[in-house]
Length: 260
Image 1 (cartoon, rainbow, N blue to C red):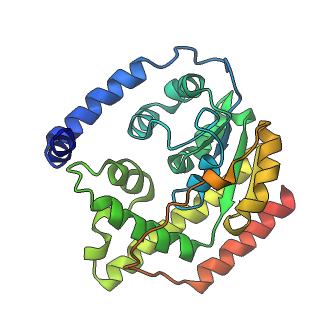
Image 2: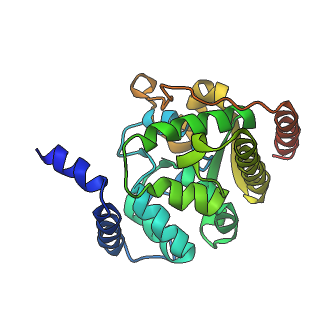
């Protein structure tokens, strides 16, 4: 019965109101300290959604590593005021590792904030064509939950990337290409911006398993890859292919790795 009630509420205008109330309550409970790190100097995997962040985060216990922590509240508050909330959030969660795709929206802030600029970051590399394909297909599944307020679409894809993934499949072919172009522009821009970060480690998505021993040393914890998860789309309704942008991405990555 409770599940049915929750499912009903999610499909009504009450959904957004309840989310806002919950976010206010959660953020008000965050540690107040905003000028120094009280516990762990969290290592952040900041690659966009659909780059293997679920796998990395789930390879360690939840007390050590989390994926998309306090998801809605975090995006809502960081969109409002990054400087005010980022370190408070870090101190509240007190994780050794966090892998959250929405952090890809804040590279400039991370590089400039007096505390976050000295943290360590991980950027998972994936060819743009594969990334667009995966992101579009995954969000059709998320849309299937019939949320009245598709907040991930509103707070990340619309606000930062400039596309409406919730209605992507309703677009005509030209509109889909235009939306995919916006996605690749965001993706390339994000990747270029990572060179602003003092301490950033790059790893191709295909090499994540081999990267785990290095990550274990970075956070001084033992991985449990047998418990890891991969958030794969069960249905593939769209495929994007752009060899030119994939080649440009590889050249960009070569440059970043050379200077890293």
